[in-house]
Image 1 (cartoon, rainbow, N blue to C red):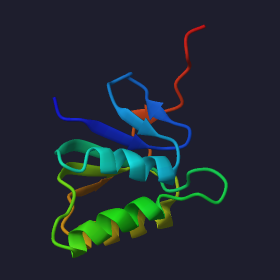
Image 2: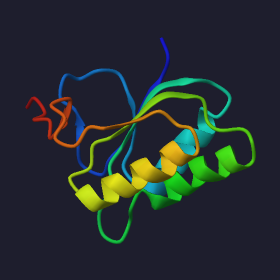
Image 3: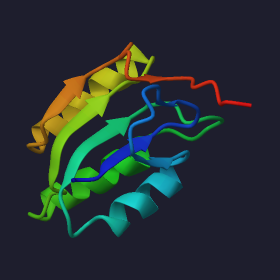
Length: 117
C-alpha cells in the first residue's frame, strides 16, 4: 500500500486511516524527504500550521524539485485548508509544476478527532 502523508497542525483523518502525519512545515519537509524515493498515494496539505508557520516551505520544496526536473511522485495533492486565498495559491503553484491537485476545503475526511479515553 502506498503511503499517505498529512501535514496539518491540529487535524487528522477522522476515519483513522493509516497516514504519516507532520504537525509543522519542518516536520513535513523531513517526512517528504524520507519518502523522496517512493511514490506517495496522497499528500494532504493545510495552509496555516500554527503561529507563524505555514505550508509554504513544503510547497517551495515541491516546486524546487519540479523545477530541477525531478518532482515528487505523488498521486494526488489534496489541499484541505480553511484559508481560501492560501488554498487557491497553493493549488495554482503546484498545478503549474504538474502536480495533480484537488481543493478539498471542508473535506469530511479531515477533522478534529476525539481520542478515546
